[in-house]
Image 1 (cartoon, rainbow, N blue to C red):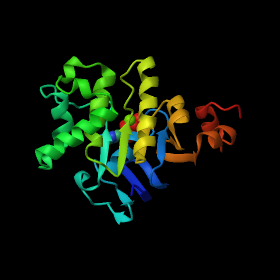
Image 2: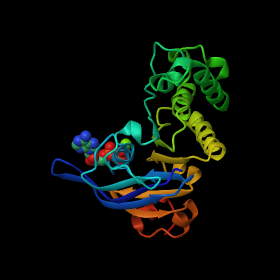
Image 3: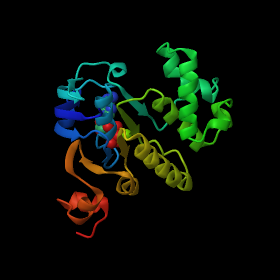
Length: 238
Ligand code: ADP
Ligand code: MG
């Protein structure tokens, strides 16, 4: 569970091609980072996978099933955004429970799942607070908690840490890596930050103007960048 395959996927906005035909396979359980400069199409690619944008052509398979035309709610994926998108008037508990309430899960099961997620994320003592009473890092954890309770087949993160200060970013990187290690769920993580990519990824996908320049592990990209763009971007001395 958690394999995602993109087959000749493209995206244009009007006449402007943002993603030329692109193939990519993400294995079950992998931590994959999409990295590249601002405007290169990272968010668009993630939104295509999430179903928040329709592809112009091509196909997406999730766990072997054709997901190309499925609405976001039926893809089994959970997206975590940079702007936490929490409900300010709801407690942490209710923010995390929200997707389960929408799915009409029974209350005892909801409480169990919310408390398990809160434990993993060190939010247990904050469940009755509102987002306004939390730090940026805690708010981001609540957003992740709301994704965890859905038990998605994959997590999609779009620059989730870019609103946090540098020290907290380093902490949250570690927490997300630990979360990946404990859940074992596929994660796709978008960032323009090379350090984030190099420290978190099993596999890095380097994007440039919607194209994949290279796919490989951090060490492969560092030691054997396939061109100057990758070398310059990853910071290796080619
Ligand atoms: P990144 O996340 O890598 O910064 P995006 O995926 O947001 O890049 O954007 C890639 C390109 O697609 C940019 O040139 C952007 O202006 C364009 N783009 C993104 N969304 C839209 C849209 N809804 N309409 C028109 N152009 C868009
Ligand atoms: Mg973006």
